[in-house]
Picture 1: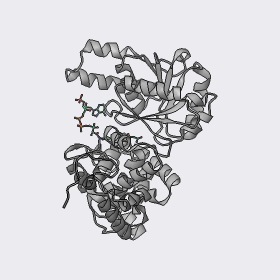
Picture 2: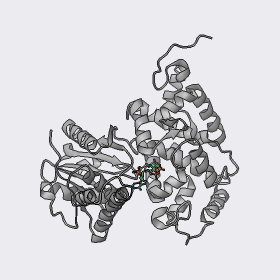
Picture 3: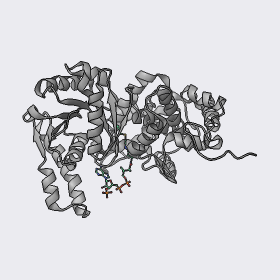
Picture 4: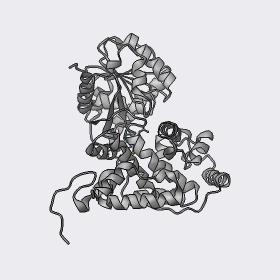
Length: 414
Ligand code: CAA
């Protein structure tokens, strides 16, 4: 069991800066390293902003903020890496770039140092294989905004040791975050489940089932914290594009990206970071872009005028949760916890994960609706085998006291 006394973050982007704030807040020194000084400064500034907002709300004093900020240092070299205990890599989501970083880290960090990656969807085992210490390489996936979202997915690769897993779980708890262990698969857990929901929202929009605003409103009206388009603009449409394509490559047709995502990506409508995504953020760009792109997609696909319902969006997420469960990516409770703590998933009554929601709907109803949508909209709605097995066994959810989870209390006799 090793202890973490000093950490480093590679990459001063949105996530890097946020993660450095989280680490410093827990009282540990942290170095932000990037290849250019501008990005180092941006990362430090992002952390400062988070603290400044706490000071202005009276949640900490200026003096406390100064103390925390003193724990964060920046570098464009690997100065100070000779005694780091844990590194979190948060650079561009490209395997070649990440592998090069891991090779360098392997050389400059002490042999005992744990190397983690904040990748959203790339293979941890592949990154581990780029080093001479695959037993000490592991995924540590934070969620955006990192200072707020409680979840960290912990993803061991094929060769990651139990010691490394335990150390990183403990380190994550020390950051006042919630670690959930996830078996390695494309998109891990939260992105794997969130993206089919987002992708279906894009299908609905490009087919004219409802407008962007109507869809966002339908989602927040059901108790979710953000609509899918508002969320994508915050996360980065480019990030969603990359993750969706990785999922498509790995899982096949059911994850095929809606064409509108590709059009936004190609036009650099990447959301807040470029001033406009699904929505215009800075008032200087073409307000009608999304509408024109939708008309283009309809002309290309010949598909328009499909119908909209909230179920159309949430059922692909529930279905993917069933696939993840049948592959033993995580336990039913961990799946729900991850979606609540990583993506703020909720309904009107409060935080609620997809499996609890499915149990409430009734798994027979879930399967029947998926089959209806499959007939109407296509193969991507084909119910996961585990869902059908549960229905055949009479495990229908809350109403039979057994579904994805078990419920206490006597069954009512009719
Ligand atoms: N940075 C730092 N702090 C932030 C912040 C940001 N970007 N945005 C909000 N906050 C803070 C606020 O300052 C506030 O702090 P206090 O409680 O101390 O006052 C707190 O968060 C709550 O903020 P608000 O009251 O303004 O807003 P809210 O209640 O609407 O909550 C939210 C904001 C927590 C972000 C909520 O909207 C939410 O959960 N959204 C879903 C986000 C999500 O799904 N993220 C995961 C996406 S997937 C991903 O990230 C993985 C990937 O690889 C792509």
